[in-house]
Structure formats: structure tokens, C-alpha cells
Length: 97
Image (cartoon, rainbow, N blue to C red; front, side, top):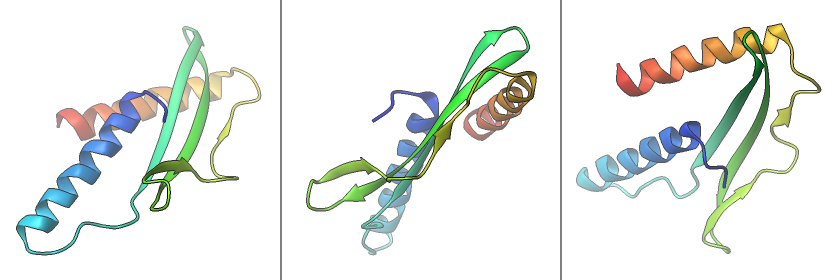
């Protein structure tokens, strides 16, 4: 499981949804999905990314990577740098309001 702020955000949302469901007398989602995107700046205006998707595997009792989902940059670029800035603004807004 990637160790990233994006994954922490996803874990928190799934945990909160499970608590709300249980308090309402419902079962939590038995097969949650987590998406992860991690950007790394290689220069002040260039970045690259890796993205993965994970699903719950009841047999293994853990989250596993979804084959064929996600991807990564071929090389750093200014376009990825702009995407990274947008991603960071969005996740900070989501977490901090």
C-alpha cells in the first residue's frame, strides 16, 4: 500500500463512511476502492506522477492493487507540473476546508 497523503485521505473517508453506516444500523461497504495519485516535482515547474487503484480482497483480508488500473508518467513535464499544482490545491481543500 503506498504511503501517501492521498491514501491517508482515502483511508479516512472509508473509515468515516463505515462508522456512519454502523451508527445508522447498516453494514459498511464490503468492497471499498481506494485511488492513489502521487506527484513528484523534478524542477520548480515540472513533475511526474504514479497512480494506483486498490480494492478490498476478502480472501486476503487486505487491500490489493487492481491489475491494469493506474499508471505513471513517461517523463517529467510542465503539463504534469500544472496537474500536480491542481491536485495539491484540491486535496488540501478537501482535507482542510
